[in-house]
Length: 410
Image (cartoon, rainbow, N blue to C red; front, side, top):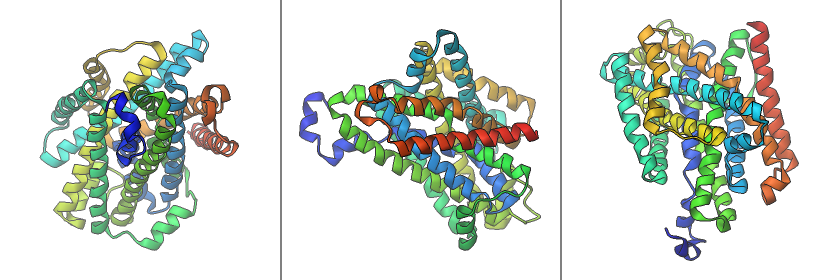
């Protein structure tokens, strides 16, 4: 749609729908293979007990993604670019490096998860699955250079596909409704390992790299469609975030509930392994249930590794004003995953550990996000109300407290 066509379509639903998409890209980060590892292990080891962690983590994530989108629309800057401009010169590169490390830790979980999906579904070796993942993710990423909205639509379709699969999985697994509601509403831990898993769920749900990415995608919409339509874009963004995060939250809750219903207390189900979960689903629920579980892992892994590469590109561009070809970045971010696969490390343990590492970086992205969106001069008429700031800082305290507990007791 060209600029002179915008006033005519300004009030139409079709026009507002133009601004849907960035949150769906961000939401993929919340259902990546790291979530599979933490949710399945939580359900297998503790039943429905940690469902409340998923609920609260998803609510936190929705707030954070809305703030990230709002920052891009109000300031015409991404979070990374603002940090690159406002941090002391000596702090820019260390801050950029830690953000890149977090993005790479994310990509390890996502890439290995997709490779594991190919292995489970088609019988490839993990290395063969990794090669196929590399080829497909590179092909989809090439859409970014042609049409960003097309790429957003493809990723959004992947998100919806995974959600549909989990509707079917719930039908197969028959989780206990009362236990689901109790687990989702009543907080509680049983031991240190349950706290460790809670931190992993939080790290897998509130993702630092998509905090950076969402602001950049919103900024891109603002640049493309014009600043005079900022209010319409912001109204659409609220719907974008609400829809996308509801879908992602449903997938995470369904994943843990399915694991609790099928694996908890069953001697045939070993604790928490994705591969064991796939193998155990066949005798417990049938071959179709196992196959669609593998398909969901494959789709989520492919989509999230694409999003991870986009996030890394935006982080570099924002902090140090430098971009490299996406193909080269894809090659760099894939390298650690190939090393891990070649070393034969336990895939599920790597996935869970990567999510715990991510939880340590959330505050480093979240603190500046709250500070920037509280700046009246920067945000113009979109500054955070007081209650939003309180919610944001409460989220920071929860994240830091969980991580501090892990450090003290390790």
